Image (cartoon, rainbow, N blue to C red; front, side, top):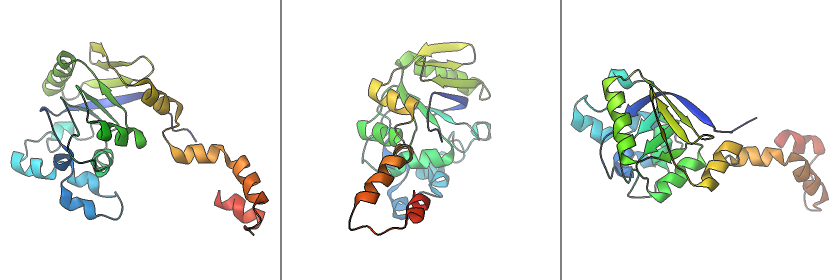
Length: 205
């Protein structure tokens, strides 16, 4: 099993505007869910109603797009982890922006979604390309730290620690746990208060 996130390819969706907060990404009334399933349908729910079909998440040309291109301070506001989960359930696999709120960025990394930053001119160029040609291919390359969109390419940035977590797959705590299955079994076998049959332990892990 590999959770390495190195290159994300697909189509982009331009979402123009600064300071788009987590309450706009997923309104508070949807936080009562027991699991994150179904949150994707509610991403930007209020903004989409107000836009009357003109919001990028409702426009047919952007259906199936998996890379979101945003502006400054994206994901600000409350620290709800439901915001990146809603984007992920909608189908977003990477976000390119001018800047991100710190907690939102961390919540994205925690579920394997890279948030890379670029110069405002780069973001504007990407959004313009995607508005004029929604079918343009876009690639976020975490090894080269570049974004490619059609014939346009530019550098992007991300903290090295976060980049390493994504490219090595260590953002995924389940994968880390499974990678240590033998030491875990050995430790369990030494615990005097655990009376598990070894076959049950193996099956559980």
